[in-house]
Image (cartoon, rainbow, N blue to C red; front, side):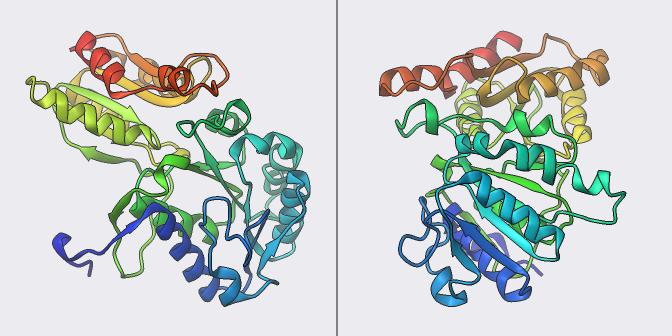
Length: 331
């Protein structure tokens, strides 16, 4: 039984991920980690793997050469021969250097071999802007991987979801792209001490409301919740839905919320054209149009590389003001 809410311990998103890795490595000796600088001398670019090499040794926490294609290629080979690799790519943008291994190998193996071979691989990587590290290290590319049949895509927004979804990903039989927003790592949240997992394809209503549904992903969930608190003071009741995974996507929870509120605003940090928000908007247009009392609206990044300049970066990233303005336009 989970403890009462007031008794739940709090930990950071970073620590929740590390705890998930530690627990799964203790549970299953076939789980191992590989990536650049994840071992005992650095502990990962964002310190998620800190201390794990000391506990499990260099065989199971492997520092790799600076080659994303080699990291994922090695992980795919290990996965199809019985291991459960968790590969870390230092920045999500650098997955472009391993797209053949991800999109043409890992994603297709189960299908092409008729289920006789599986690829239980997890690719962990930080996405998102907000820390002024320019265009090559700040993109949100979730939609790329949604578009690849055979890949699962997770976008946890809280420490609870991060730990539960990562454990589910490691135990599964499918390749999982696990997106961790850089600004989420220090955020604290409640995480039970008891064993738990979070299923893929199960969205969560983070806040109940009656006037408008805001579907938000990853770090945008927190901005949507902040906007909802501000709008409450103006008499507007906002329901915030967090998909938690993009593939599989829990369409029914999103549609059920829109049926209740009659309005939908979708907030994501990726580029607006052909992005995550476009897919969710299309689903609502196809399956919930009769329940909408206003046009679907989207809040996303403009179609531009992420600027290095802090003022310009702040300008392109969706914020609470844009969410509030868009909600008011549909209510």
